[in-house]
Length: 300
Image (cartoon, rainbow, N blue to C red; front, side, top):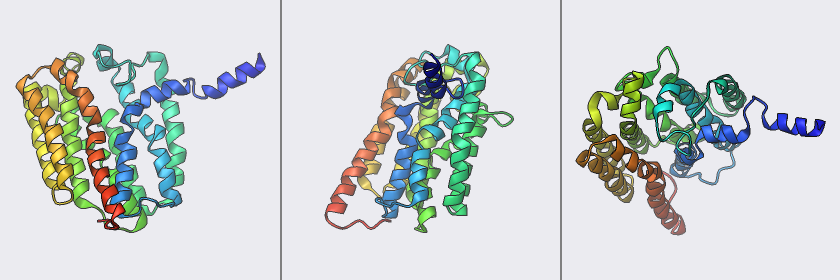
């Protein structure tokens, strides 16, 4: 009996089981953090690096960092999430009141040790960039700023998703890939707006003002389309195929929503939005394999 208790306690060190923490961290979206770092390594020409700081960073950008992003978001959005039909599954957890304290403690316990270790292993500018990303995610969800409730700033704060792209260059002393970085920032702002369109009813009833509640579904689709267009234009000089894939997929889903502007249509298109990084990344990956096979890739 005592052995069973110890095993149970080890699996729930903060009052929440690991499977619950995984659900909150939304593993389906880890590509937005891990994939961004790997892309940054590719662009630096050091994809196979064994730099300790970058290896630890790769681990950190899985469960811990995504727990910070989505755990704090879910803690702050309990009222909105209670009205959202997409929460409670793979698209995000629906928290009970009793889970709030344990989740906050778990988020801090999973993040602070990594951030302290990375501050030692990474150069100061890389550390500052990582901390800026973490701060923007916290500011998006938490008061007093709670940028989610500030239309315009809610989407702009999502440039935090792009910042890990610069970390390999900053850690290795390589040139920062500015065009891909700016392209990913523009894409992140557009994707935030597009994804928020399905939540307009829940956010409106909860009294949360977002760029989507301000613009409406059709206006939000147009707004997202503009950012996707800019992202492709910035990416074009680096990779024509990746830019075309972004325009076709992201631009296409924005146009589809604009043609039938309802929250239900936005929810139906959301799974496509989820996989867009995978699709565009696959296109870029094919190019990488080709260039590596021919010995043509040394980084930007």
